[in-house]
Amino acid sequence: MLKTRGNEIEGIVVSDKAKKSVIVEHAYTTFLTKYERSLRKTSRIAAYNPECINARTGDKVLLSETRRLSKTKSFVVMKILNKAE
Image (cartoon, rainbow, N blue to C red):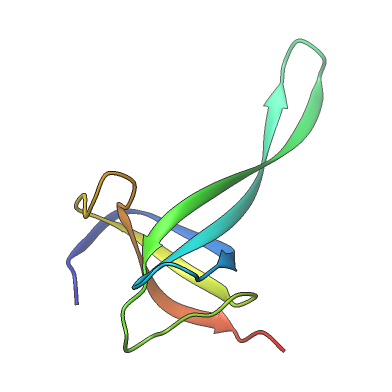
């Protein structure tokens, strides 16, 4: 397993087409002080998907930050919180 540090993020796997990697969508809110409103946003994070975990589309997963693995990947799937139906 890889050494981890920094952020831990929960999200839903939206794509598992690439070999040993997944795309995870993370929803969050941010506050706009000018308009005094909250704004819902989503970000798509590329993460390493170890063969021992093997997350699939629709799974809710826990990501942890790690060293840079490629140009886009700096997160690893730690565990599956909820399996997809």
